[in-house]
Amino acid sequence: MRLFYLTILSLLTSLSTLSNTAQGQTIHSKLASQTQRLLEDVQMKNASLSFYVVDAGSGDLVYEYSGHRGLSPASSQKIFTAIAAFEKLGKDFRFKTVLGYKGQVASGVLKGDLIIKGYGDPTLGSWRYPGYKPEDVKTKILASLKSAGIRAVDGNILIDETAYSFNPVPGGWPWNDIGNYYGAGDWGVNWKENQVNITYRGGHPGGAVSITKVDPEMPDVQLINKMVAGPAGSSDLSRIFTAPYSPVALIDGRVPAGTTRMATGSMPNPPLQLGVDIQRWLKENQIYITGSVKTGGNLVIKGGSVPEMDKVIDTYTSPVLSRIVHHFLRKSVNLYGEAFAKAIGYQDKKEGSTQVGVEEIRKFWQANGISKSELAMMDGSGLSPQNYVSAYAEVKALLYAQKQPWFADFYEALPTYNNTKMKSGTIHACKAYAGYQKSSSGKTYVFSIIINNYYGSQYSLLPKMYRILNVLK
Image (cartoon, rainbow, N blue to C red; front, side, top):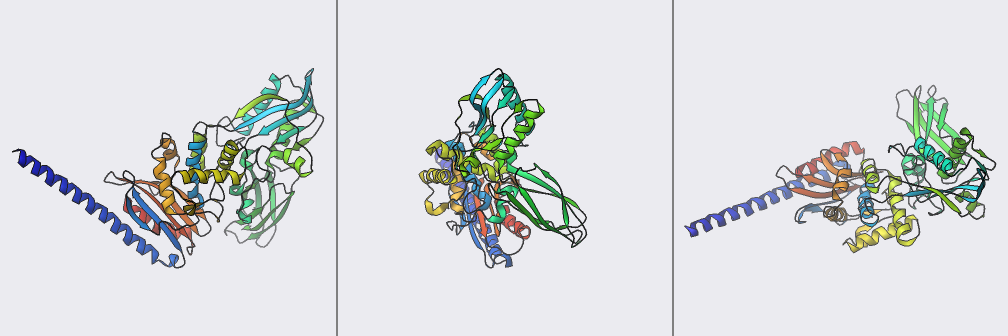
């Protein structure tokens, strides 16, 4: 009888092994078939593909096509920054902004400068977080001044962004991206996610386009309007060009006739904008100021020194990192990626620059098995086309994440596309996805698919990519 049971057990084990092997071979063959179908598509004639799939439980390879080929990943690169931020900064990390002054307070009058010193908080004045919106910041600052007994300022308002690098924009970002909202750089002091909204109305076809509102108004910036109206119902092809510290912003391109639209660009000087807003808040509340608004950056430009704070009045902190990562991955906010990279550089090397922060992120991944040849980062967000990464490296990063105590926060932050938890990436002629797929059999797969230099529209390419990933369901 014992021999009978052992024989049955052995047979069942063999059948299970054969079933799993057959299933694995079926997945492999289906992925190979659909990948070949994609490669033969006209959109892929001049394109490059890197594709890698593993079993999430064992880490065993399921299928690959040029899995180690380095390609521009666009925003799918954000997974490397987010995971490194969780590990190096911690899920409960908070950015800080300090309010203080240089001088003395006597009889309610500050004899000196009121100072805001920033350490890269990308959420200051953001509309995404209750309690951190512009009106909330206003309430906090006014309450802090009241608590400190300050009813007037005999001096300047200084916004000091110099704790971080003078250059807010990473190398490698295209000029036609920098002026748009998604190309806003990361400053030592950020404000309203460094975005400006420009409302305009198109006239008759071929005629002028009028700008009806600029919010915020951007102090000391001349906006040059070169937009023209196209046919009614045509596409909005407006473009915004601004550069850090520049006194000129250009908006041009063709927009639909007879319609009111809004374009969102990046502020050329967010610290100055915050200072002007604070100046207005104080005057509205009868807190008088004798001086003007100055920024650390503009003092540096003029060859001056930046005053140090004598006394701290209050410190304002951002939401915890895990909340910021949620929007970083769900909404693909490039500003947040640069803020994380610089925060890592500041923490590790006391230098809040893109170059140092990204190098620290790369060192982190090299220590965890991803070589330099698999991951080359120019920024923290993936906007630069000079970034390159292999599908293998993205899969390895996702495998690493699932073993960490903060994984639930990371997984929840990933967007859902095509009923799959995955981070997308999109820049010119680049489309990528990296994430996790639970199959109908209960098995979970980890994958990355990156395509560069495809022909035509991304919207016609997407269903062809989904067709491959649907094999994993």
